[in-house]
Length: 458
Ligand SMILES: Cc1cc2nc3c(=O)[nH]c(=O)nc-3n(C[C@H](O)[C@H](O)[C@H](O)COP(=O)(O)OP(=O)(O)OC[C@H]3O[C@@H](n4cnc5c(N)ncnc54)[C@H](O)[C@@H]3O)c2cc1C
Image 1 (tube, rainbow, N blue to C red):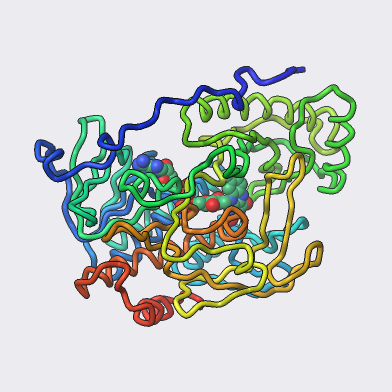
Image 2 (cartoon, rainbow, N blue to C red):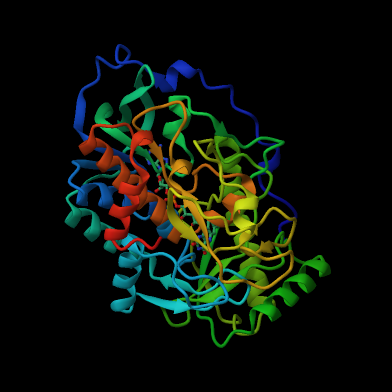
């Protein structure tokens, strides 16, 4: 048995502070850099939000570039997960998200690359997909939309002229280049662009807790497994026996589109700041180490897993929460639990507050319910202002770094909602270019009308 982490993520060193002039640059600072692309809209990060933003902006006629650090589109949804939640209100089969998100899900469902899967512990009906099919579907949607994809390219600095963002610096294997655009969408998930531009953010710290990280893994050779309730009971017993190191004693191992292949959400690395590279390195190593322990437990103790084997660990450790924008509106817990609606809402959400920060278990709180009550099926709205920074013009922030408190974020971060925020940000960026106004001046009624015309449910 492993007695403890190889490197303890909680005691990772703190890197020296970043000099602001290294990431927030002026036009003078970058005059020596060659321009690799120039156009209307640049999206940084090609996850769920960024890919949807790029498709939306391109479909609305904007010349659009989407920059992604990895070698594929889909981000966390492709690298870590296999189920999109947030499309359906828990406790019902009522769908609350349409648009590009549902177009993507339907395309996967139609060809058998995805299935609808009920969830016994809270998030409601999910769309469980093959991650490889998801990557291929994003390739098709992006290329057909006319957006220009750019993979293996990392955003490193924001260029500002006063309060207006004019360019970003990206790093490729051929060195740094400048990318110019009229509008930028930060869909990095970690608010990298907004941080570099100097926007006000909620940053992970000792007082601002963030949710733990999880290395997911896939298991092959599973035959007629016992129930989730039984899994939880056996996890408790195994941990209590002292023979296994199992930090999380609930979570899931669920069937996938492929026979005999199960996808897990079991490991837990808590108490680190995911923007700290030393801590993230230790977390990756610890996530793999826990995987070995959970596999040992599953094979030893869980009926149906006797002959199972590890197929793969997630491409990277999954980050639920890092930096978040403090934008023109900050969505909060009260908005979620009271099912609040807004004049400028650009997305609907019925997902519960799902907080993994509570020790070995997960805390669920449903929209428009009291503590401990079952799902109501009600939705709240997410205002456009949650995507709009206060200090910087020509920038929008979409995806899991939207402007929301820790509690509200724990509800608003599902993939279906991130797809909606991306579609809204991409549409708003294109509309703001054609109207010649800044994103904060985009008329919310015009934006909502354009979204509804594109099958978004509001
Ligand atoms: C362990 C875990 C389990 C979860 N379970 C579920 C679930 O079952 N269902 C569900 O609906 N949601 C789940 N979530 C939440 C959900 O997956 C995320 O909130 C959502 O996928 C975030 O999408 P995004 O587009 O905002 O960010 P991401 O998908 O993280 O995309 C960000 C992209 O930006 C790229 N990037 C980052 N920085 C840079 C840079 N500097 N330059 C260039 N590119 C960059 C990254 O490579 C990445 O592709 C889970 C999250 C985690 C971590």
